[in-house]
Image (cartoon, rainbow, N blue to C red; front, side, top):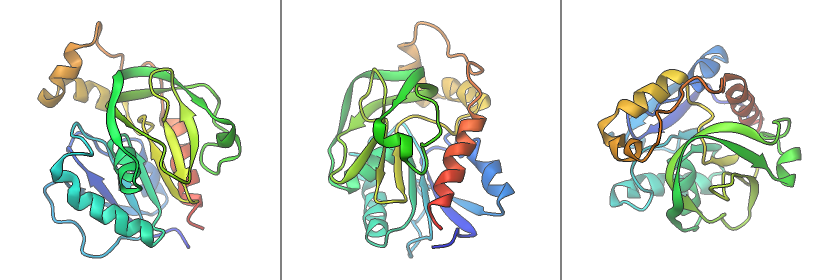
Length: 223
């Protein structure tokens, strides 16, 4: 499969967008279109899907149409990249349960790669541990036949691969410093923000290089 010239992006909140990923796609000449939660889903399975995060649960009834689209896309071996909620939706579509994590994981935390990640097409070459930004309260079991790629001290399943071009990532490699500031100001996030002892430092880590590594390598799995 060659790299498509367009990708459909399932976006659940306007403030949870592609971030660092957007200019990387543009530089490659790959267009993308956002489909928000209230938009009609594309009638046909797109050539590739990026599924972003959001404050809702993969178990909410409103997510049923997306889960159906993901299940149909899986039967066609459609390349997919799920971030945070997106990783949970793919896991659920593969039959794995999604449930509350023992605690919130919000902020900058180290992610440790598994042995399988060292030779993975996407995660190979990333230093372990690497500090990434997190914002989630739910987690998932590793789907059957998926390859476990990463963990953190607060959440075991941080990344996985299914087949060769479907990836679920619990953390947020795409996030920019501007997005972190914006997320903390969103009313829907006020409950999570209230649990924090200190405001999040939006500039603690520049994730642009590792975002490029992950996205470019995921695109290379299409070929």
